[in-house]
Length: 517
Image (cartoon, rainbow, N blue to C red; front, side, top):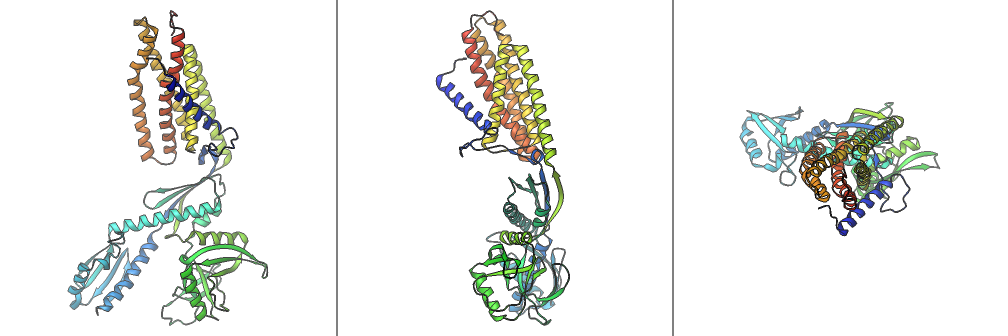
């Protein structure tokens, strides 16, 4: 029946007022922290930068294979088995075994799961497969091992990218996975991405290594260039300390020497290592290496046992700030390459907003005029429900602080059409019922009841499509699906509760009129 109990009317009123208040909070200043929420504008509306990053897992895989070579040499040396001709190539390790030891090596590799799959029990990662042809052996990363390496690199990279972006203070950044080796970064409001590109393009792998003239170092030596490629220096491959032991870094103005430096602080283990190395290395030069480039090479004047130190170099305050940021956020597990970049200016974003609002207003008023012309007072009721529908929709998006994009505006415009469509179906059905039923209240009630199945079927199928778009789509597609799905729910609420409530009030008061619709 068209009858609404007082409790139902109360809940309709409370729900409507609450979401309308949230909607209006986007346009008025609200001091209450609970209701101080707003819809975030997406990249296409606010302007900003879009970066698609791809992880280069090659260095990670190579490092894992090289570590495995070292592990194999040590393991078989203890068993008095000599392996020779090690070669790392195409994600494989090649090595030769003496013919007399082939069966023994095969048995070891077959039996000792922990040797070729050292993390199998705990993490089921870094797994290897092996094969051999006589004395020539091949050790390769399994498909499962490669997938785990990529997933691990992707997860770590996303966290570090997020830390770096957050440190800059970018407003409402979006950082998402894209496939197995890509990261999407959207930075609304940022129209000059050069600094963030520079920060994201650095791995920030920090090491401390002694400079040496002795090419016969037990750990081996390597030649590294300074940051500006002006000088080549021989350093020991022995890593005294890595960035993993850093717990803080910040820029500092050294007024005594009138230069900008980066102060760093080490954890307990790092402080102990650093103290031991600087105690035995007084008088030596210590190279501070970032991503394979020497950024500073001071001479150790005295032991540093406090667990803190400073990095000097030809820094501006901005470059020192960026270096400190990189060190605080940690090293990326693998290099990141920018494979796609777009910048949307704020003017273009404002044009998109204006175009979207203009199209919404035009469509909205055309619908309003048509409904009044076609259904008179019931058209007014439908229009009131439509306005309320839009406010509740915006209120729900505001409550969850959703990001509104241009496709999202399209979803709102589509909601207007769907809401009117539901009312048209109901009113046309009521016309049919009033032609066969003298009792106006029964006729109107039958119109709502008998049109319900058609309206629910149409809206539920659209809702299913929106849900599929949300889970299968990405970016703008998700924005469209969110507003569409929310619009379907608010449409059903306003049609069957708000519009029906006012219809019941009008029909009850005017039931004796000869013609109502």
